Length: 359
Image (cartoon, rainbow, N blue to C red; front, top):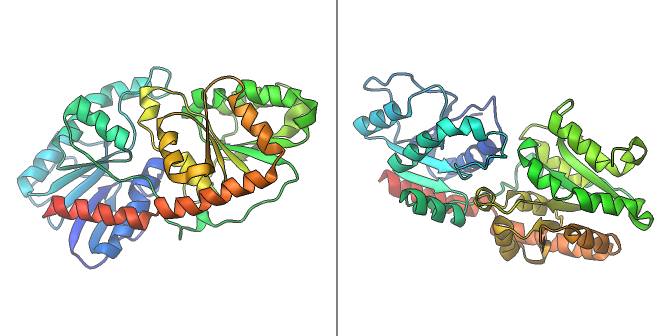
């Protein structure tokens, strides 16, 4: 990954391009490479110094990272930056208070005070949503700026190449940290499969599958109703790298975005809706804060439902009977995501905020 160009404002982004995940892709890679065209020099490093003698940060105007760093002292980094006149920009994409049912709850307990201190000491804090901005203002008194997740439509993985199926495919993309969300669908999918009128009309497609993973074994059992004979209604797509996973949306007709209604979840972004809309898919989503925001911008491309038994099912049955509605809503989502979630537009704001911080 070569992000360098002739110097103007120089930023050191601390992340490992060999170990990219969703956070580093959407909050580092996609936005920062776009800043090069706006006069920034972006360098990246997977790790940084364990001590900070004078001159460590020569040539840099700012250090950028997302909430927490491994294998180094945050306080020493901040002290070094203050000594050398280098600004610190900290990004936050999720709420730092994880619910107890979250798989990472325990490991986050020791990170929590570090994340809070990082946000309080930063020269600039960027967040993905207005709700999260208000939350950290309330918690910590920190003023952040909102730079929402947005798509680089020139990235190869966002190319439309739909795979045709005679059945209508309801798709979900995610991983083990979303077990509570996916469970919202369990009763409705079981009911749908029990109805002979619909059984041969649909498939459920789950993307992100990891063989021999406990979460995925459980999900596969639940959504095939524990019966191999019924597994024809369930397709899984293996987990893929952050640079090509989005191609899985080409195997969906309608995206499903269930989400638990909790304080942690309300601080999330509407990324699942953004991804699906990029491929011209309508989205059935939980009527929860991040997807309410998506509804405002994606319009009729998003159908909001309550997290109660039968709510997803009712809309799924309707769409199975009306492919025209599926296509019409998908077209609305496709047009709206390009209007409201283009990374070039968000980077105009990002450049403005960064320049203001570094001036």
